[in-house]
Amino acid sequence: MSVGMAAPLKPYGSDPALSRGRLIEEPASRTRSAFRRDCDRVIHSTAFRRLKHKTQVFVFHEGDHYRTRLTHTLEVAQIARALARSLGLDEDLTETLALAHDLGHPPFGHAGERALDECLKDHGGFDHNAQSLRVVTLLERRYPQFNGLNLTWESLEGIVKHNGPMTDRAGNAVGRYRAHGVPAGITEYTRGHDLELWSYASLEAQVAAIADDIAYNAHDIDDGLRAALFSVDDLNVIPKIAEINIGIVRRYPALDDARRGAELVRELISYLINSVAMEAGRRLNTAKPNSVDDVRKHHDTLVAFSADAAEVETTIKAFLKQRMYRHTRVMNVMNDAESLVRDLFARYHASPRDLPADWSAGEGDDDETSRARRIGDFIAGMTDRYAIVEHARLFDSTPELR
Image (cartoon, rainbow, N blue to C red):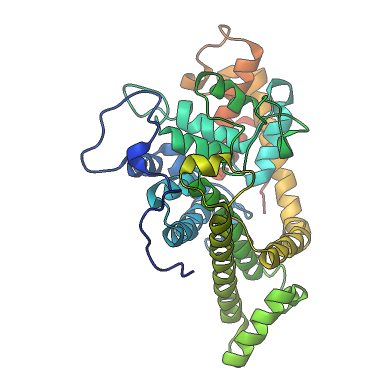
């Protein structure tokens, strides 16, 4: 199946004309579908702009050439649109979910998330997926009629469930949520707006989720090479990459390492995208869903890597975990970043007057959990550089994060 050819919307794709609508009813746009409107709202949101200065792996001032959350998000959207097009899905909904998937990430990537989760452990913890939902349903304040972006049900479902069901039909947490439960922010929201946590999400959401995997695996390799954490030849411990590298050397024997690395990343992305397109096509032919509700009720995800590609992807993750994410240089910066976030939370908790006026409103009028979560919301919305500036304003010594 070619990923470059457009296909008409399939019966199992999400038809914007059949959307379940918005929580707060609005007149339909004369020029845009409901899902295109969702996508535009995400692009124009404050949270989306802030992704420009949020860490992917390297803190923003380590160099202009490394990915940020924004550039990563745009790369996810490109891959997701290509897959949606080849499978006959709605590209606007797919793009909405790709662009919104990291809106809830705090500064300093997963280090910031770990720190906030620890700070909020007595108040429901912190989960970036739940925070993305919170951003688009509450924290964005741009419209006169409502808080959040008032996205369609399908967009909210995809933001929450793109990685699969969170509960069974009885409401018991499943999968990776079984140990600690569904994040509090999601359970609280779905009490008033049922997102059917027991079902799979649309194929558009499944495509956005796997596009995220493809993008960060391939582009973290690119950033790791640029940072000299490993070499192109070091990656030959992964058989598929060794195979790709042999082909590149055969075609371009005089190519320098920088261009060889870039060609490797391009070919790896193409391999993974084509693998997903073929495997999804095979699963769809077997399952034969006739509607998006058939997709939701199916017993398994329908967009996935082939067995061979899944093994390659798992091996890449293991390599990056050892050679990049746990590299001393990266770990030292992330440990300092965690401390910085914990410092900020403790300071705002002990001295609410240090918060901006619009974030300290309600002091004394709400309970401890509400106050803690408001501090968490404020910190989660920070960019890397704003968090560093705030820490320098409030403390005598601030880590350089280099």
